[in-house]
Length: 435
Image (cartoon, rainbow, N blue to C red; front, top):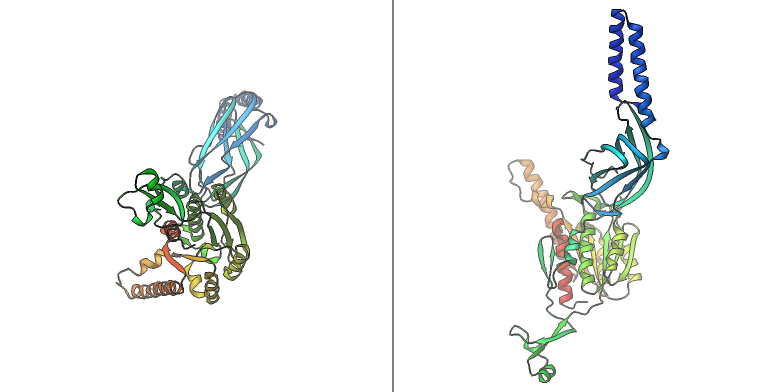
């Protein structure tokens, strides 16, 4: 499509005014011919300099994946078989959930190639298409422009925020850094011989290795660690309650990030990690496996999970788990504590599973509700809100205590501390050889 520019409209208006003045002084015909002939010649030259669409090749360069809310660069490259001297601007098919680019999407094309770059970021997890480019080319005089739509089908994956996972993988041998906190992973007990080293005063005298001491002539001690190769199964609730936003992200986003952080630690410890995501059906299943490659497999399986507007079926998910996982495992269930409180059939099923597996239930505490319990009661409405929030808080605490009394590990934590608490509980279970 060839369109006139605003500059062309202003020049045409000025020419009309010049023709009107010419008629006023008696040379209107000559003025009309001069203006029209001038516009015709200049327009012809400019249109001849504008390239044909078939001669141009456009290419978008963007990463295959990026973390949620982490900026990334996109480049639009144009190539022509002959040198050009035009101005060009683009409009990319940026998904609506992405941050709008702040850079100028226009530039000058001088030569055979040109590039326009911009920065954006995905605000939600998922798989997003980039389908087309809208491109405008303006001639050297700026009177006419060609507008075209180029189809460039590409897809990009927006993964959950994996900064905590990368911090774990890059951490030192004796400690992990997660959410700005140091997670101590010193193993207090174990049944698997890890190493024999020289005895130091703080070591347990019961662990002195007398055979190694006699052989070396130096007091030696045995160092044990929990057995490796244990199975950790992560269960992600994708039901209606997990779509609620807390601290500008959904509960499901927080649980996915916490689950991947826990998986990174467990895999680094040499354990097998698997995953089940469910609502009223099984949405994703990753069989347990070892090695850091498993972390990538799990991430690919759950990066685009969405919460369904249905109640999660715990009985269906747990029965499925018992079919696919016979070996004793650490079962970590990420959900909302409200589901544990109001699903009466869930407790009996959990008690039955406790005989075979070690269960850890993680609930997300609503910080807004907690803050309502701390407000000053200046008005009657404040007193009412505070009393209701306090009742809900006490009900959650009572439900958590009831689950713990049945021998099931359960914690109700703020969304910002979910990953840290999950990793600490896992390391505690490992250090006690509870599996």
